[in-house]
Image 1 (cartoon, rainbow, N blue to C red):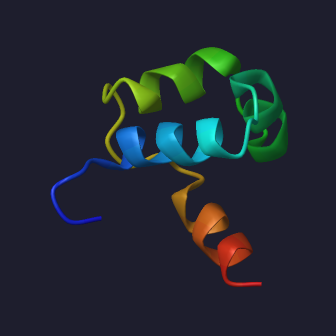
Image 2: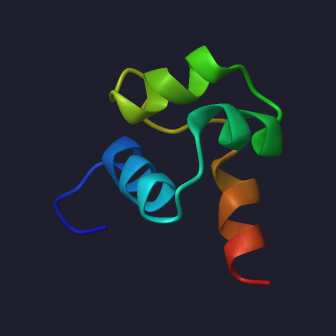
Amino acid sequence: MNGIDFGSYLKSIRKSKKVPSKELSIRVGKAVTYVSQIERGLIKKPDFYGNLISRKNK
């Protein structure tokens, strides 16, 4: 992710896969507001970051 923050990256992937933020929040077990804060850069490294990376590699 050279030059792009995690929140922007997450949002671009979520939108490209056409996953609503509510669905993502359910998948990661967090509130929609938490996901929104990550995507807006208010939370830099979420506590589910490791879970996303491990799921991606399966």
